[in-house]
Length: 66
Image (cartoon, rainbow, N blue to C red; front, side):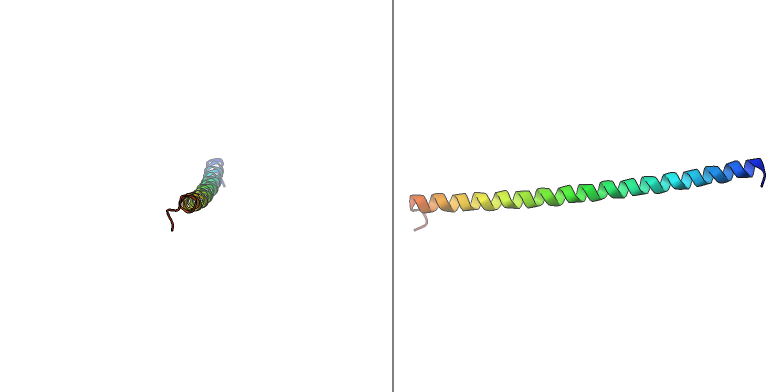
């Protein structure tokens, strides 16, 4: 293998490794974003349920539910 061929081979290897690392980082970022989205949705649902419970308590306390 000539010097130029060796340099080209090494450059190709480096490029492939860089692309693989970038792909892995993008996957991790996507997973983190999905996890955050799910967490926020769950928190929103909990807040909604508490607000509904509070509304029912007020209605019961004021006699609106009767």
